[in-house]
Length: 111
Image (cartoon, rainbow, N blue to C red; front, side, top):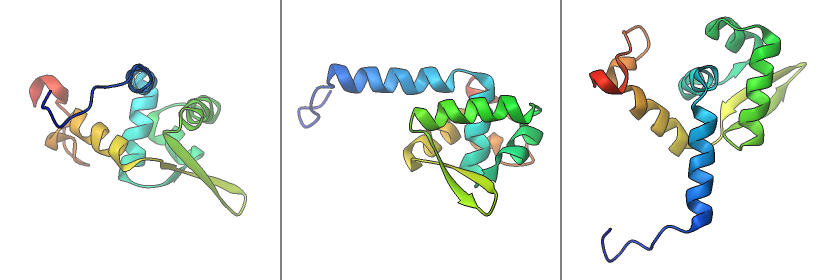
């Protein structure tokens, strides 16, 4: 820690641990990866993650409650988007440059 950086508060550590815990579920991490690419509705997210709409909806509700996802109405549809560009960057960094759309993801071990 440099002298310019303040120490982390217990609350900041707890919040970060909660966020990482939320992203520890494969389905939620996949949803966040997709939302890092752009907005989507629940049906699209379900199809792209191989889940039922009900399962994707439950994951989205948890992500929304954790403050990682926002929702907006578009007519009768609910459109979801990543809430924080820092989380988007974190998710992108987790997969590295090989996780670009259309390429094979090697993950952290292969980066």
